[in-house]
Amino acid sequence: MSDTRPIGVFDSGLGGLTVVRELFRLMPGERIVYLGDTARCPYGGRSEETIRTFGLQDAQLLMEMDIKLLVAACNTVSSVALDYIERNVRDTPVVGVVLPGARAATQRTAERKVGVIGTAATIRAGAYTRAIQTLDPSIAVFGKACPLFVPLVEEGLLDHEITRLAVQHYLQELLENGTDCIILGCTHYPLLIKAIQEFVGVRTHLVDSALWTAKEVQNILMALGALSPERSGGLTGSRFMVTDYAARFKELAAAFLGAGLTSIELVELEKLTKQCAAEALQ
Amino acid sequence: MSDTRPIGVFDSGLGGLTVVRELFRLMPGERIVYLGDTARCPYGGRSEETIRTFGLQDAQLLMEMDIKLLVAACNTVSSVALDYIERNVRDTPVVGVVLPGARAATQRTAERKVGVIGTAATIRAGAYTRAIQTLDPSIAVFGKACPLFVPLVEEGLLDHEITRLAVQHYLQELLENGTDCIILGCTHYPLLIKAIQEFVGVRTHLVDSALWTAKEVQNILMALGALSPERSGGLTGSRFMVTDYAARFKELAAAFLGAGLTSIELVELEKLTKQCAAEALQ
Image (cartoon, rainbow over all chains, first blue to last red; front, side, top):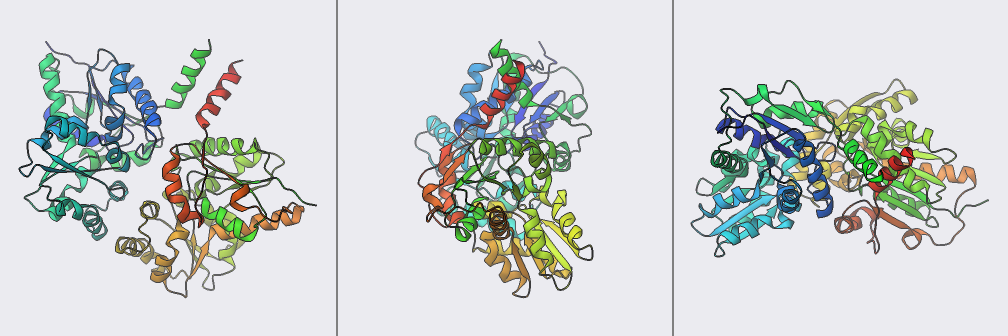
């Protein structure tokens, strides 16, 4: 059995490209359709209701493209809206970024103390804490919101004194709490992994949610016999869509994806909303 | 002649409250209706078309509340969409934050070299440069986008080493260019005025767009004989609306406004969009 249909991946912006990179690394035969909702990015500070609405709109657009599996590569959506999307997207497996990262962390903490860093909304939602404590109630979880990390990454200040100070500002407390494993609970954060590892030291495990999400996708597709038999998938056979301003997305994509994008399509989710409203009136 | 109707003020988020603060300071008899489009904030990185659409929706919501003057307290909207809004909002004066700041700067630069700092979109749009060079073509304008400033303000790191480094990172170049006057072209930036002034030194004038916008509003209302005769306006008689998640807005409002808000209303602009779509179908 095999399935040549693409994997759908969405994020509020371009952070989800770190998940795409790991998917390509693990499964070079797979094709991706990616949606970055750059017109409404970031989802981080928004209400749960808004996040659910936006996440479902993203999912529905990808579902129209005959995908075999859907990845919510957005920590905010995965934290507060994954169940909601799963209920509305039937017959297609949905993978979020929270559970894979949480599972990897429980297997790596010797001290039974895990730190989670992410946007304010991800930390406030507490989905990583719930996921870890469901897997192992004996593990203490310390969440820390790091709102400066996304703009630092997007400014390209990956190796800069400002970033080192920001890392110290946010992570000092986690070290003082004795955590020996920290989940990078935001798809932007893998780009800061060097600065973070330097500060926390090599004895602290950093769990990259993007990597573990890609492994989860691989496991599911393998179990379903739905891996693509194609010899070459990757960038060539994939599509990348954004809802606003493709130029900036293109500028930054190379850093996230490890390769430049030649073609980025602009799509309209608002139109989708209006169409739904119009249909509802008929 | 007098006019007791409120002044309408909108911004993509809560930055516009620095303008409200200056309006209250100059004209304590005035009432304000404020709209912060927090559901779609920030406008900074979006396309011009999207910014025009969002700005007009904001304006229309306030126009329904019988205001006597409309302030676009958002630098992004003022930079790229003010003409568009003026054309669509007839018979009501519209004031943006760009021209008042530009005018004040031309009067303050002895070296004829003005720096402008703001979001990426504001700097890219170049509206301050055009406004200054229309007023005085002999003035050289140096724009510098400072994307870290907004998250630093919202993190409350007003007096922190990270902020001092970020100020240096962005403003060093403006000093090297010989600017003796810098426009704070983002409504969040007045909260960083101390850190900025410390770095640039007392000989560099900082032009606070919020202050000069409030003065412009006062001048127009005076010319129209439309100042409010009431003895007390201010917070008590004013309304504050947001499109998403009022709790965070409330948390931060005190820092921007210099006073806490007791009541913040949640309004829906999306519904407005759907209503328009529905009406168009009839």
